Length: 273
Image (cartoon, one colour):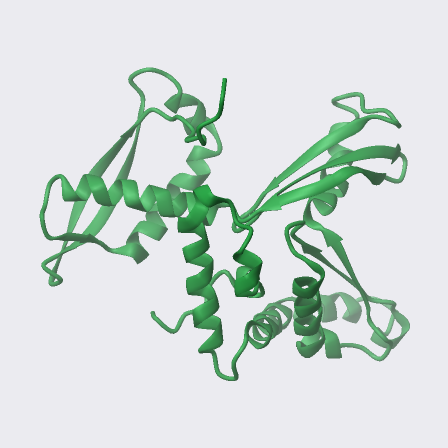
């Protein structure tokens, strides 16, 4: 569906935000530029409007559950202080965060309730830290004053921040070193996987084109495996991962090809020893 808008978060960036992208990641930059072009063709134009509409649909799905909870309590909506917390990537500058805030205000979330909304924005790694610390503090004997490095690897961005633990009973952290972020993430890894699978298809047919929707579904299936036992298994000699990929032959017929991926090794930029 050419009209489908995806990866809305990256669409909030501006073209100039890509100027400092790492030279090794021009293919990733191209992905974001394609997203931005689709956003500009959105009617009414702009990623802010598209993001606001996405939040509308999200809120339409969540609100009935909140109202159901209210129906079983003695509280009224006007008596409740409602707080929305949005996590934003470290790589975003103030202008991009401002566009996110504008989208929130334009959405149904921004028009909910009788009281002024309490809307807060935190860095995505900070949200991850606060969510995970309670469960790992005891297992790893964390103590006040220790520093923990949080790497938040998401769909479109990767952020790394170090936090010092200042309180454990009510988890409180403070940033130790300024965080860094990059336009990385699993959407770019999938692009690399798609290119790899296409090369394997090309080896068996001269006219085969991957059915990208079918590949996305197959990648969703194996992505969970890659994050669990399969990832360890791929490090073992002789182990492989099988993808069943549909492809179009001469643009008319759809065939299925079994693709074997052997081993696993990260691709790193050239560095001095």
